Image (tube, one colour):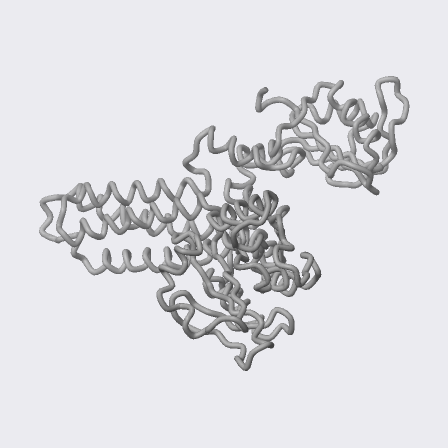
Length: 453
């Protein structure tokens, strides 16, 4: 495969549909367009055309759109053939493009070429995929902001501040005999403060974006008949799980995603934790414990009508260990069935935190939703930017290097150490937008895209 090949792919989902699109990109697009359409369409104008096979017979009729280089998504000549969305029709149009010299595009290759041709950076390309995969409106808005370059612009702003610092310190290195102490100058301290404040702002927006992309995985666990499945149904707003008075009704793992003010929460209902009565229940309990190990938070449901809510948290470490709950996963105690008691719906501070509610009536559900958002650090008004784990890791490394540079400044270490830490910090930021990258990273990023994008 070569980056100079002309590529083609079906850009719409497989199956029947009103419209199907075959997309081509590369230097041979004008020649191929003339062979399929008889004429090259005028640039950026939708034209009705017949799509012809090798014998000149019509495969389909539809719309042809031609985008000459460089004014296209990929920066190359691009042709889109929009026909009827039948599986056979699309395959025949694609087959004709391949006969004329195209090769099948790899997953994400159109977006990869857009990056390689300077039409977007890697962060923007990733935002394209995040927009496609967005599960909530808030996630989609964050992806659009990053796709339009807001995340990249803020990274560039941070990089410019580091460049100013590097220029200042390298001037000090070049003129060591000057009496002026460059690094003690107030301007350097102020620049460091601006860098730190910019890091704070970007990390907050990126962390919110990562939350919107990855969501929060919450496992609902507890004894049989504590109301786990009832709570799942209430949070999901529909009857996802079967609820009966008989203990042990839930045998397998049930999953449902809900949105809390835009935050995707992946709810996982599990089998009741007790001594298994048969092999099927034993397997359900094993799966429940495995899910708890992978969770971001555990909601441990307790029947408030059969327990002392005020005393449950006493000695909770020993209690949680005895219940087999993983110590590394944050825990919230949910005291359910308060409709059978005189207890009010409320949230109680402590370790672990406790929420008193009724899954049957819905009392206290808003407290639980607020608790989940707060515990995840989610702020719907934070102006999130679509970000991934690798972005957060790069930001953390860059910030750590700037902090090392500040320490070198405070301890009057050689100027070269200060300058080197700043250079490495800029290099870490460059990984976010693709200024610094590797073939393996590009393969991993664009390989996760769908074919045709």
